[in-house]
Image 1 (cartoon, one colour):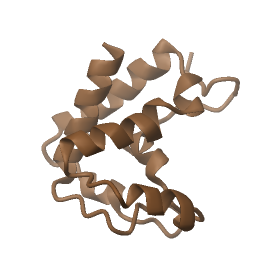
Image 2 (tube, helix red, strand yellow):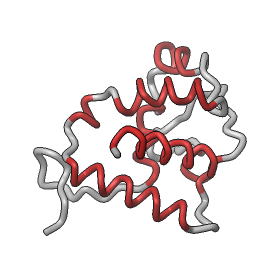
Image 3 (tube, one colour):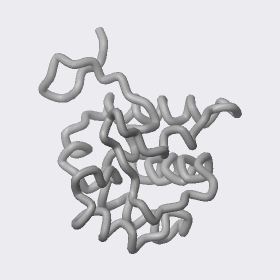
Image 4 (cartoon, helix red, strand yellow):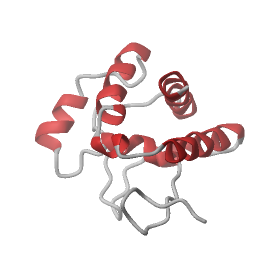
Length: 126
C-alpha cells in the first residue's frame, strides 16, 4: 500500500524540494521574505536556526508519522547518493508553480545546502 499524506488519500510522493517549502516567499514578500533575507543560508549556524523555524517547527511536519519521515530521509539520501543530481534546479524560482526563494539568498553550493539539511534531519529524527 502506498503511503498517503496525513488525513488524505493523496499519495505521499516527495522529492528533496519538500525540504525547502517553508522558504517559499511567493505572495509573502513583505513578511516572510523580509525575515528570511536576514539569514545567510550559507552560514551553517544561521541556516540551522532558520531551518528549525521554517521546517521542523511547522504544523506540516508535526502532522507527519514516522513512516513519512523515513520516506523523506530516504528520498533525500537517494538524491545525495547520485553525483549528478541537480540540486540547483530545485532552488530556482518556478513561475509556473508560484515558488520563489528569498530574493537575497545566493546559495553558493546547492549540494552542500542539501547535505546540511540531511545532517540536520538525521540529528533531529535519529
